[in-house]
Length: 234
Image 1: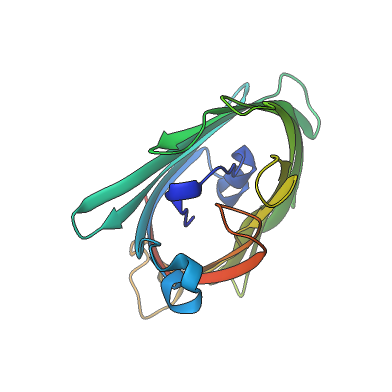
Image 2 (image 1 turned 30 degrees about the horizontal axis):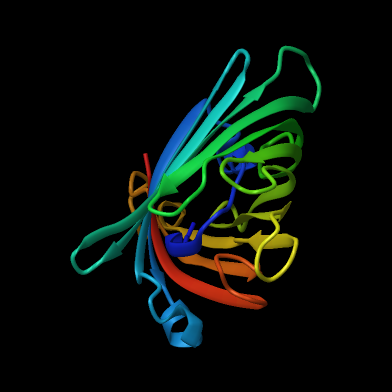
């Protein structure tokens, strides 16, 4: 999940936990090399390297998801951002209560979300999606009472050698360029331990993420920024 922290305000939502449904808990570390500098003059100061740590764990009353992103420059960590979200469900259906916090440094406003998530998964957890609708309180914003809609998805195919995952956020946050912000980050992965040439315990994946945004992170208009990435699952 590549983030440009100098102007960042975004939420992935706990729907991303769908990437790990089918297991009681899962963690991974990702390293992304960002191509934004090469594609757009507006991104000339964008950090080249971002790391992501993700964790998902389910229990009797729902599930917890968090991730931490860090951007790196030559002299060290330039910025950090994290989200933690809880899905609460004391009943047997596809709807859960969604509670979330977002925050970071140096310029990220605190944000608090409360809403509902609808989720659906196939019986073998090879594919699924979530839809979340949430009230969002963006601290220190002149108009802090906002909303956000989020969709997430995952799809494993080719005997789980390949996967396609990601999310799309659309939220209201009045700013210099408009009232609304859009951000989507689809990811494609090749899971090496599914190939005979690799040991089954080699939990390394290689792939790419594409950040598709509109009026996001202080930039006006549409931007499409790919990365090259590796991931290790624990």
